[in-house]
Length: 431
Image (cartoon, rainbow, N blue to C red; front, side, top):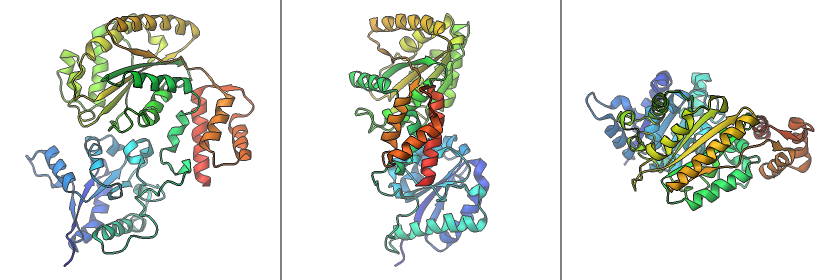
């Protein structure tokens, strides 16, 4: 008796409809032959509950095909789908790159190896290449799942090879550009998360002179330290790292509303009461919040914009907006990043932050002031090269150090991150 057809769910963005159509036509032949049963959101009838129908489809899916592009990664459909990826074994989730985008920066996608195997998007492929590099690989997967052929000697393209001990096998390698230096702040963050492990809301101030990459440190926490944290490492982390540029307004209410509007949009919130009651409670059913255990929010402020409304805004954020402690709510991390334009700005604002910290402590609220960021000494770059490229010989590491950093003794972190990314890409191309 022939095997039952595999339930294949295809998820895509409307902007990628032509690539969906091209792939769908090829897979339709397999459906006609009884190998698969295709489903996409186009199957949902008018008047049906779209979210309920999608849940039903995913629950019955045996293979999940994701057409990856920047439009898809920003879509509501992907934000919904991403919260359900852990339902299927990794080898049955097949991302297909349809347009150029930084998919490796998305934690749940970074665990997978994408099709086509050369990482060149379908948009740049001919019809023959699409068939040979995507459809043929999908057919192999379908046959393997159905038990029609034995498992191949070589892993299927969408299954990451087993760890070999080489860091270069890690698809998240580019995120290592954030991990040079900053060991003091890393230790402070770990200590604070352990001490405050029972809190639902955490606050961290990340400060430094311009070009010391306050944003880079917040992304390091999001990509590396939180997933590797003994308390939060096994949690389901929202794939949407909220990033808000704070522009203070003399009218405090306008300042608050601008902030709430950004949160509302980026977390895909639908509860408009947040604009009237101004409480985090109204975010808990947002698409990027409700199915996750950890949510990260970064807010960046340039010191030139600091005015009398900023301390009032921060006090409102911590004591009023975040005044919620429901047992089943996710853990929220708030990272306030401040770029100091000068030492004068730094000294003035540091004093105000310390005053705020004392106010919060009187209300039993901890706002962690991480050590200010400074330039990166050359020796820390040497240590990074030794630990990250440890499979490379000493001569090659010294060559990279001289090639990218010359004889200079210290560097701005923004420059270091840029050069480390170039080194990582060069190293990847050579292995």
